[in-house]
Image (cartoon, rainbow over all chains, first blue to last red; front, top):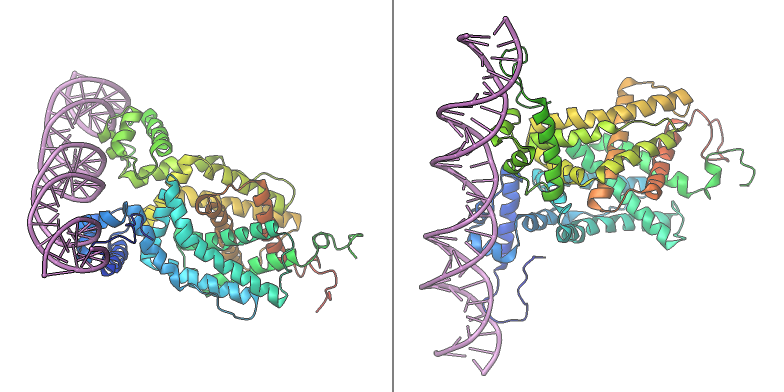
Length: 222
Length: 222
DNA sequence: GCCATTACGCTACGGGTCGTATCGAAAGCG
DNA sequence: CGCTTTCGATACGACCCGTAGCGTAATGGC
């Protein structure tokens, strides 16, 4: 979880797990009060009641610290079984939107993503601790929809993986853009409209073999 | 365009327009070489060949400067008339993806968006100089689709505005998430898959009273 | 229980950036 | 030609960074 991990089996005084939690909580509090740019590690250390040097022993810098602090916000994400693909998507999107409505997530998430464009290890860190967890939800929802018969079972595994990636980018991207760029809440009305478009597009494309979609008078299909 | 605008009608030495272009170009160059976090205004001034004080006379700070520098990248966006809604969306998305593939856009755009979560004037600045320009493309593409008969003419203007906002968040959000978070190129294959899902979802939802194009066995009336 | 080992709190430090103030020179406008 | 405003240059205090050094606290091995 941390960037600077001590060799685990060794002897000596162990690292305080209490300090870890205090530091991450203090980081989120500082994100709320100060935002990303004005957040300083010295301030975080003071809030957490630890020395600044302790912070540098565990994290390489501001980026890594904030990634860990924000990642914990996404722990609560679950896929509620609401009986249909559309309803399931609605549930997940609403949870995702609720997290992004919190100021500590808004301030921190996009900032570290921006930093990650020039820092490959940081990007991998974000992928492993935040993105991958979200993508698992898409896989779970897809499996349920297949079990219900709303989506066909995966034929080509490569094609299936690409589809999951596509859905993930569409869902997460739309919610993020709505809340952070358009700066309007992803409330129930919006989520319902969005879900309807996405679910319709997915099922309409996946259900027919491909050709019968555009031309009702196609000779080859029947 | 600038944050600190001099009273335009007054006398005295006018501001150098050459310096403006040089500063914005230098900002983009610094974004490519250094990224957002390591970009310093002193460095930009040196690259542009102007004094640091000149920079502060025109822009309030790093945020506003980078917004203007990045906004110019989106000037080239156009809606190519390719004959169908799906093809038009594909064209716009490909252009958008091409811009986001440039490092100066990747580094700068998300950073200022992150900053804007705690800076309302900055958010308004981004909206006016970047987002609004993009949204006009959606309106243009929508009008063409209506003229072709692919989309019904707008019935409720409020509902139409909400739909445009939704489409915009989905398109821009998906491309941004694909290129910056998933860090994979929005190439032609991806854009085609994405466009197919979106266009299908839109037409299938908007068109039911039009033609029965989705389900050949659909009972046409009720 | 003693000792090696590691983490911790604290302080101090050089280095860098920030944003501003100041001043003399330059460039338009009437 | 005077008035006005910008420009370049320099200097400045303030802040934060990231690390080093040191004495102390907490473990595990023996």
